[in-house]
Amino acid sequence: MKSTKSILQQKRAAYEPKLPAAISGSVKLVEGAATQSVADQEEIKKLFPNTYGLPELTFAAEAAPSAQSVKCDGTMNVGVILSGGQAPGGHNVISGLFDGLKKLNPDNRLYGFLMGPGGLVDHNYVELTKDIIDDYRNTGGFDIIGSGRTKLEKVDQFEKGLVILKELDIKALVIIGGDDSNTNAAVLAEYYKAHNAGVQVIGCPKTIDGDLKNELIETSFGFDTATKVYSEVIGNIQRDCNSAKKYWHFIKLMGRSASHIALECALQTQPNVCIVSEEVEAKAMTLNDIVNNIADIVANRAAAGLNFGTVLIPEGLIEFIPAMKALIAELNDLLAAHAEFASLDTEAQRAFVLKNLSKENAATFESLPAGVARQLTLDRDPHGNVQVSLIETEKLLSEMVGKRLAQMKEEGKYVGKFSALHHFFGYEGRCADPSNFDADYCYALGFNATLLIASGATGYMSSIRNLAKPSSEWQAGGIPITMMMNIERRHGELKPVIKKALVDLEGKPFKAFAEKRDLWARETCYVYPGPIQYFGPSEVCDRTSCTLYYEQC
Image 1 (tube, one colour):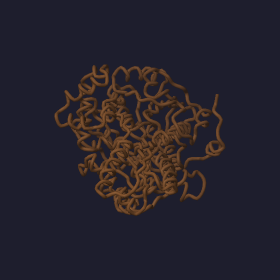
Image 2 (spheres, one colour; image 1 turned 90 degrees about the vertical axis):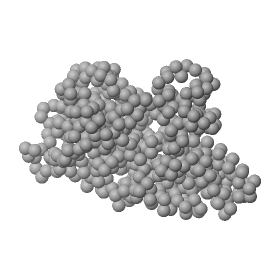
Image 3 (tube, helix red, strand yellow; image 1 turned 45 degrees about the horizontal axis):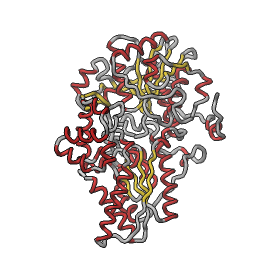
Image 4 (cartoon, rainbow, N blue to C red; image 1 turned 135 degrees about the vertical axis):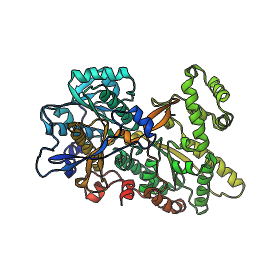
């Protein structure tokens, strides 16, 4: 049974995403220079001999069809997978993919594999028809086919997937996911190419965290919408904060491997404090350094009669504190090598860790509050990472700030009252209806993917660029996924992975923040962005993220 749609959903369904002019009509393919990986070139080349060094691809508009036009000879069936965590706009990627296929040939078909990569391996799928697609246009979530975190990395998975791909006569597979999912896409593309399987693999850049980016992937989809959702709620909290004038709100935001979300939300809302993990690491700050900095800001505002404020915290902060980073790295290797650890009780696990860690890391582990230390040893995610979202960093910091302020009060350095409230914004933004930017961007990514497939590309990521300009001026094409790779340690082993893009401390977005943060710390400069606007003046409803604006202005 279909769910009842709200009035907004009904109106939103009528929105028609805008395509770049370059791919709206007849299109030809332009090959650029050969590429290489961002690091570890020889190692990556050995692992991907069939898909390494491919050229950048760009699509250019033609006045009229020609012999060089991108076209579909005969019919073409395509499969699509939603992989990893949800991000606003995934449904529009699939809509663009569907429309692109039908434009090339009305007899082309699109199949969705259910619940992520596992659907490919287990042969669970559905044909996506116009009726199904039309019901999900411009909506949030991944519920059209569901998502999952199964890693595609074993030969038996590739072969099981190939069985159903052959049965359905699928020519290409589109994997919509983040850095790890697109790494899987590259591995799969290499395997199918090496074995002449006749199946192309194309990736699409998805993650609200914003850490899947480079000069050709200017932003991952979902980042724009999620940060606008979070900024709305932060603005609401700041309005309440400025009304009650008696609470400090510690707000943790998604972003395990980078602080793009926290920085973007800070640029939109102007909080009193925003911690940027990359700066913490660059300055080799300790946990006490961070706590003392926040306590000093609280004390200075209290001296001015302002016993309230907001603190933005990226969820991955713990991993960027050098001493904690070293501890977590050793813990990851230790737990990966000792499966028996999971069967021990809590006390035995703590004893095991302290016995097997290096002296320095054992001292760091022992100094942590028992709850935080315990959280560092919990089950890893499928990619071998600490599940930092389970670590209540916001409560840890506020508790430590409270203790520091008590000491300062005894020393006569603090005269105020400190009451803390805690928030974690994560899932609230992952499945929001996409902003106009993400609706357009995602539709273009999917439509563009069909052109890459029709051009015979494999091992490529769909790329839409020039995103700070109106959508009609966006540039479309593809970049080899291997171009974004390096070698990193995962589960205790060296693996090829897409290199995450961290906040650039020399970049314009961070510098714009750094220029104003001292003022925001002293005074109450809150901005209240309000909700995402789907209708209204273009400067309101079509604006890009602050990050994109500063990077391209």
